[in-house]
Amino acid sequence: MDKAIREAQERGEFDNLPGAGKPLPGAGEGYREDWWLKQWIQREQITGAVPATLLLRRDVEDVDDAIARCRTESEVRRLVDALNERIVKSQRGYLDGPPVVLKTLDPQEFVRRWFARRGEG
Image 1 (cartoon, rainbow, N blue to C red):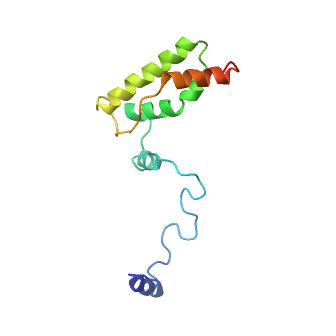
Image 2 (cartoon, one colour):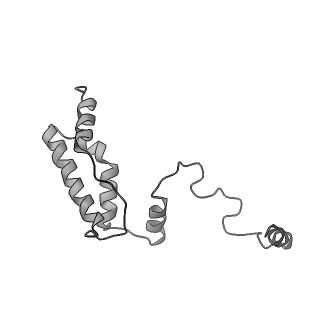
Image 3 (tube, helix red, strand yellow):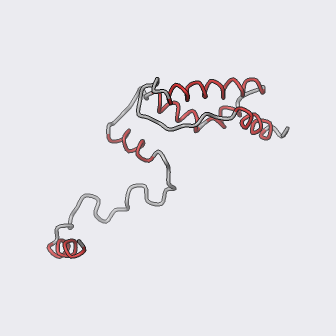
């Protein structure tokens, strides 16, 4: 295999390829589990409406910001419970969009985070 590549290089078959001399896309960025998802959205030029499973994934990623806006412990619990309901629907295939693998969230853990953020934990 190395010989075939070397010979192709010598013949100039890799010269003037698109992107030659440019950094690789994503070089220097940290690894993200959803890299394929971002590429899919860009490749398919998806704009406007986002599939429910992708909205759910974003909401789970942003849950800490959402709980920071909660005013009471019961609001935190309701928010996490609502996310868990959507996660279960996704796990059962009831939400539209590409599959996303998410585990249900521990409401008590997010209550602890909420209290800690408020300086009460």
